[in-house]
Amino acid sequence: MRSIVKGIGQVLSSFGLSCVLLILLALLTWLGTLEQVHSGLFEVQKKYFESFFLVHHIGSVSIPLPGANLVMCVLGVNLLLGGIIRLRRSWDTAGVLVVHLGIVLLLVASFIKAYHSQEGHLTLYEGQRANVYESYYRWEVAVGHTLPGGRVQEFLVPQEDFAQARGPAPAVLESESLPFHLELSHFMPNCRPLPKGPMFDVAVPVIDGFFLQTQALQKEAEQNVAGAYAAVVGPGGTRTEGVLWGLESGPWTVDVAGESWTVDLRHERYPMPFTVALDVFTKEEHPRTNMPSKFSSDVTVTEDDVARPVKIEMNQPLRDEGLVLYQASWGPSNAAPGDPLFSTLSVVRNPADQLPLYACIVIAVGLLLHFSRKVLGYMQSEARR
Image (cartoon, rainbow, N blue to C red; front, side):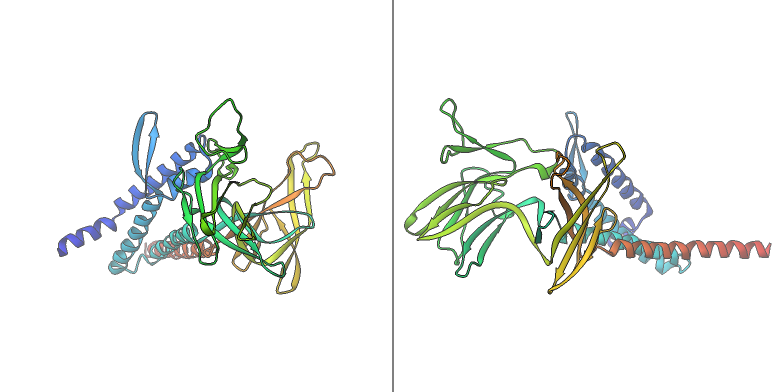
């Protein structure tokens, strides 16, 4: 048994395995880049880089491959075991070992980013303010109720609780705080509502003369608009049915036991510990063109009743309370001169935001140690000659 464990340790710590893993990472990066011709960045990232296994298709040929997630996990083990074995052998490779630790730190940062980060956007016109941002891809159902005094109470249902209800079998959502239970069915990742005419039949329910027609997924995942059928089942089995669509101008309103409730399908929202107000959006264009050369947002950040001005540009984000706000885009793209423009800020909550910087510093220190030792050794050998 001891020899088997030793053999496994030697394989996992070998240079040969390192080379194979790096070649696999290069292959996955190449295939993922080519796949973006047919699929959007979000889908490619999920398939090639956030998976443990995948199947790549070349025409009619299917090739099973390990996902980048698995490859990087094994690479982390390889770096740690290889470093420990070499550390036991000699201190002459201290610089190389420090480089190993820096690369492991990079892998840890990527793991934290993949599983513990939130990404979304904040879109504002001049004069608007917000303290929440929305996901680009994820959806949620918000059940709302207005309390005495005008305060709104919301019950949130994450996408995982209803995303599998693709057919007539509903996902039943219940809470002791709700006087009803909610049924969601026929969830469609991308769809549009259409009026039902007399000359054709549909395979989904028709409510108030409208039905949801599924659409092919867009290449860019943020362009998909989800939809679902909802039913509110109140006391005594009273049932009210409606249609939820992600681009609906307002939530679906239903009365239950004399009280008004709203049900809304929307992009998942995340709270911010401060409020951002857009004061001025500036867009500069290349001479004699409509192409923007530079755009920036002058905002006011209010936190604990303390306001401060901040300028957010493409390469100068706002970093505060674990959030990073980048200048991402603007619109509408067809705005005429003088029309109001909105500014879109990309918002990222990443606990490992600074880890790549620290990892690069560690790698730089390791390389400096290693090459300094080599240069000193060369100078000493030349002096002896």
